[in-house]
Length: 339
Image (cartoon, rainbow, N blue to C red; front, side, top):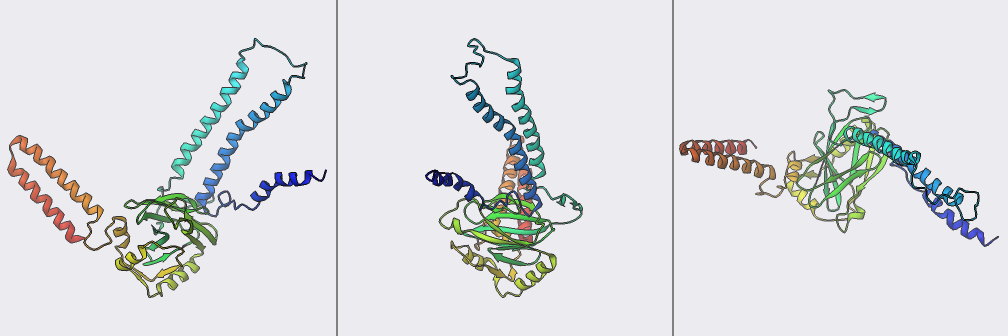
């Protein structure tokens, strides 16, 4: 009898380990993450409607038609049952249809690019309200958060007020990462030269974990930050504290910050160059580098000129081609001056 106790303990060990798990995904503090958690629960329950009966019937049939049960009906020539066919095919088909409908609706409703229409299930958002903007840059191996409306920036610390819609604009400096705060919303990839978005809101004050959910090199495991949800008064005081810092984030200081490093402490920048995020996104932080948007604009203009040239050359109207070329050059020159 005593020899069975250690074996039973080993069987209960996985349950004991699970008891210490942080189920933040199913008990989040943000409305988007809450809806995503509900979607996981509903989908799991629907799938269990098939899995549980199948497992039960597997054991039931094995027991019911065991060799020693001589009372079970023996019918070696049986090959078809309309009732069983309806159950076997009908039930999974209905569940697939329901799952498909839920997926269709939730895919559009929880689209990270879609502006929020509510703070939570009981509080809608006015269509005229504007979200707070936070620009997120994944560096090696740390996170940079720029607040363009407040004119400040932080490293490895993110703060937003509760019950305020936030639009995160996300990019990366070198390699792909994934911006993930389980309590707030699902993960969104950060890619160099591209911008992704996340619209979300935090509904409870607290300190939450954020990290990269995509392997990006040696320092990936330490690429973590703390996300603080504060009331608006505390958030305003925090902004004032950051603004009081003498550090300024411009292209030169960003270039130094961009160098790979691990376990970076929290840093505050009281001033931020207004064009810095655009330069990071378009990969033209270094002086003399052509920005990607400028390059694409020039390429588009060149293609227009070449297309027009081919068209007019076929008609023998070379003077008109020269006029179009001059007009495009003038437009590009004016645009460069305005920038």
